[in-house]
Image 1 (cartoon, rainbow, N blue to C red):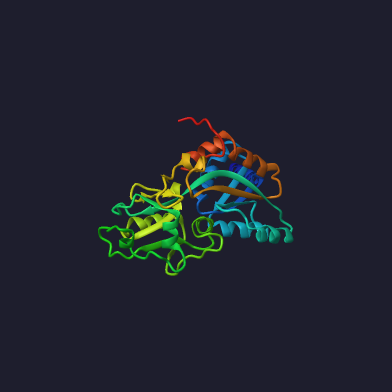
Image 2: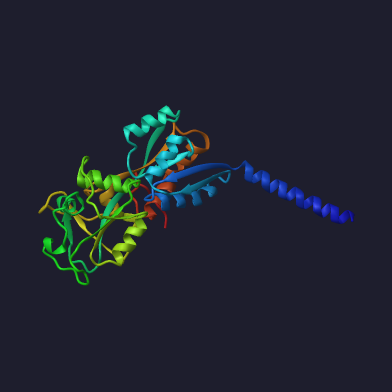
Length: 291
């Protein structure tokens, strides 16, 4: 009987120690951009080896979701593939939260078409003609091409309007006051865009470079029709020569301190930036990465 009581006591003590250890870990809540969610998850998974006393919980939902959480004070770090708007910063301030912007990488916003589509390059103006309100181009034949397996009508694939990718594409391609055409297929995530384009010969879509696969083709993009085009890549995102290159942001409530500062410093270190590079994004600085 005594041995059983001793065993039970030992088990209770062990459970108590484990519970205390789990409670002792500081939890950082990180939410937002679908573009950044994969690398954010990779950072979160790697960080316990750097600081086992800190855990990072990552969720996506789009830049708008992360920014809303920052405004409401329900997240420690908000991921965004676009800058916060002035009215969003003001609203956060009114709620007693003070977003501080951190550029953590760069991305090339790639334009995807089906592999059978013969187009190799397009200009920003041509993209606007397809994606803009009252589009000038509705059929591939109007661009002088025939796409095998396609009935000629362009299937225009976009993102949902809470996406930073949606907002950045609109501002860069359609203009600050531009609007998307009606009838676009608005996908919840970047992977959904690529999957749809892969299986739809008539389709064109856009998302972050990191979501590219061997089953879709990326278009070389020119700033002006007839001008030299630039292919999306880590290098052209980093040097900003690609016309739809963009910074990637993390927002903290005020200047980061304590565990959050330690995490942000690590993300911007060579170790954190090499994880970003391995995920297909351009680092904010020159880094030396091992194999």
